[in-house]
Image 1 (cartoon, rainbow, N blue to C red):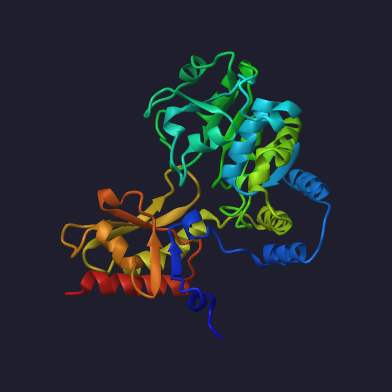
Image 2: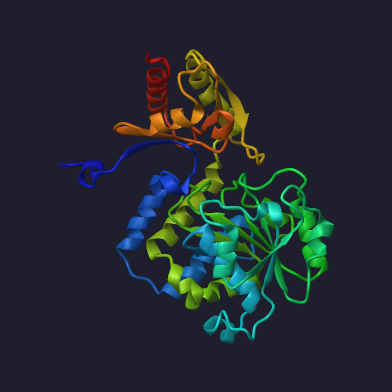
Length: 368
């Protein structure tokens, strides 16, 4: 019997890039797959499923309410629509009506990034208008505050390695500005690992990817203030209809969250211990310098940082492309390739796959 890879002529991948949407994000735990299977083989009153599972997840996390959506991107769009519509049935049926003028969503300029799609695209999909505050390399509370007008609907804060990290206001400072002006603060924390800290900081809506740190099914999670989450849930009958999530993925994510809260993410020290022999072997290969690097957004994620030296037979960009060739494609983190740096994220890489990466790196960098 042909494998799935053979049947559809697909490339088999070692994902040393991280929890990336372009590669299918994560490997699902058995508990999530079992919940998916139950969902796929049974029927439910979907409104009840969404509301009750959301309430169950909220109780696990300690939030007022929660709603499971199809992705973190859908979470942004539906959260923006929620704070603009404020529970209005007119808005639900006419989300882009010119009669509704309070549409401005303030975003620090350094947070208006492309994470695979532009942040502003998701805001506009929700009917919002992005208003950038500050500069690409600086945004203070005062720079946010000076952009607030009568047409401001919310402040959006993007917590991500994609954003500018230096000279940006903190989450707590953003909360303070928003609440002093009676505005909700929405945080996109798609790949973040802590399900509690942003709510505890005072954020009104927090959005997570279900498939990244949580290693759940293709989904997103919106948690926060009860009235705002209720307005997000309403969008299932508005713009959210075009991005609806299936019963199987609702149940799959709930199971993954239970498991995640019980076991947590891989501890940083454990990750560094797994990295140690991998880095030791890579360091024996000529033309590269290898070290441990922590995630630039401050998360407890550690990676193998490979600096491609001038004496290597090819540069970082060429090395990346060579690793992708062949029957087994190896994908790395490419964000700093223009500076001669690539990184190996081993969160979804086992010991056997690390050995295969070492062999391939030796083949590429020692060929005559």
